[in-house]
Amino acid sequence: FMHRCGGWLALNREQIASGITVGLTQIPEVCSSALMAGINPIRALQASWIMNVVTSVMGGRPGMVSGTSGFVGLALLKLVEEHGVDYIFYAIMFAGVIELAFGLMGLGALFRLIPNPLMVGFVNGMGLLIAAQQFRYAKVWPDQAYHSEPLDRRDLIAVGHSYSQFTDKDSEWIETSSFIVFIVEALVCFLVCLFLPKATKIIPSTFVALIVGVIAEWAIVRQIGYNSPIVEDYADISSTFPKIVWNDPKIDMPSFSWDTFQKIYLAGLAVFGVGLIESILTANVLNDRIGNNGFKSKIAISQGVANIVTSVFGGMGGSGMLSQSIVANKAYGITGLSTFLTGVTLLVIIVAASPAVKFIPLAAFAGIMFYIAFCNLIQWGSILNGIAALFPERVRDWMRLDYKIQRSDILIMLFVTVMLLIFDLTVAIVGGVLIAVFVYVWDSSNRVVVDRELSEDGMNVTYNISGPLFFATAQSFLDTFPAEEIEHDPEDVILLLEGAEVFDSSGMVALKKLHDRFEALGKVAALSSLSPTSRRIMEKSASMWEGVSFLEVEEIDEDELESIPSKIGPHNEL
Image (cartoon, rainbow, N blue to C red; front, side, top):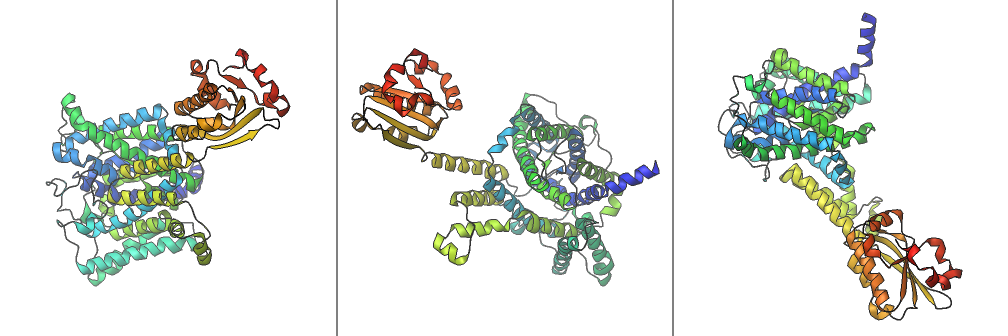
């Protein structure tokens, strides 16, 4: 038995180290998210350990860390201000139910609409956001307590969240000496994370950075009369095993009624939106790093169940956390065991180990997060792409910028990054998708090509049509065939659709109008070589095509063009 246990520990040492490391680094981030919303940080810690355990057991994305993120805290902010903390648990339950239904209906496939430029903008924005948020540890103190009235809070969609720690007038920066120590310790931990993997990968560099930060604070800095903020200064993280909310004497749960639902449903929808988007995008980033793709609907199901469970036990809900998932990835935590142990580590810390953890300097967490942001999230190559897009080809050749992407892709990247920093995750992602869709539709509207070919004897004409036929191309497609020009065509006309695709009713109606235009001019028109997809769409409106003749590709051989009228009959109809 001992031999097997030793073998198991040796086999999974990386997953164990990753779970412990992320369990520690997650503490200040989730506490900040709770304080931002005016909620006791214990609610965020309870939510985070429960979510990690539940998602790993439910088969969520391996290696993805979940917990209370800043976006979830913002989604709950207005509800807390207007109705109090006791209503958030119903809001989280509602969000979990929607996520569960979303996953069960297989709607996770909708996220395939997210283009790569949007993902690049997302990770760049998150990198800058994570880096900026580390400075809150040098400014936010417990006397801005969760039990006090929130001052100058922002709504879910408002300017200023990402840099509020620099502009907030209700708090002061720590002393200059402590701030310098904070920066120096963060820099040391950053360098450990950066250079240790070049020497050895036996121990995760992020785990070593935590140890180095503790030693630097207590063996050096405090011994010479200086200090920097530690976990104890930021939040009280000690608690007991959670109770069901209806039995918890610290929670005055309102009765569930229509009035209660009217108060919580908007917050629930907001948590659902930002939580699901952040979870799926985090999974996409991990897919690119680890290689195996997660089933998006299954991720939604596991997140939904986790939010329901955490709300029942007094947690404030959460989502996939990109920053902590990258910490886990850099510590080689790529399995469900790593996620599970992250949750167990948090539970142990909350219930029993808080006296030891509270002495960890916040600068150690900040240094690790700077490393994650600048070395693992921000894609510096995309900046070169943006610069290259500004110059014409001659200048790019002179500057040796040999990689350029479309300016529309650069626009999407910048839009998502800026909106993420200024407004909100949902605004950034939805806006980015809409821009990408508009750009695609606009480009596609210029891709319909019509080639006219007259037979050698001048008795037949073939129009070879290629490109997408849908609402954006329908009118321009019809304008290609003005009546004053096609009236001079021979009597027999073939519309060859081998390279065309009919995508919607607008494209179908345009094709029918063109056929009727030829018929009105006394021509005998036939449609040929429909693709299987176009045929399926058109068969659903079979009555529209009564009297319209269809030819197969082999029926329009040049030697047989003269026999086309004899081939047009009822058996060739759609």
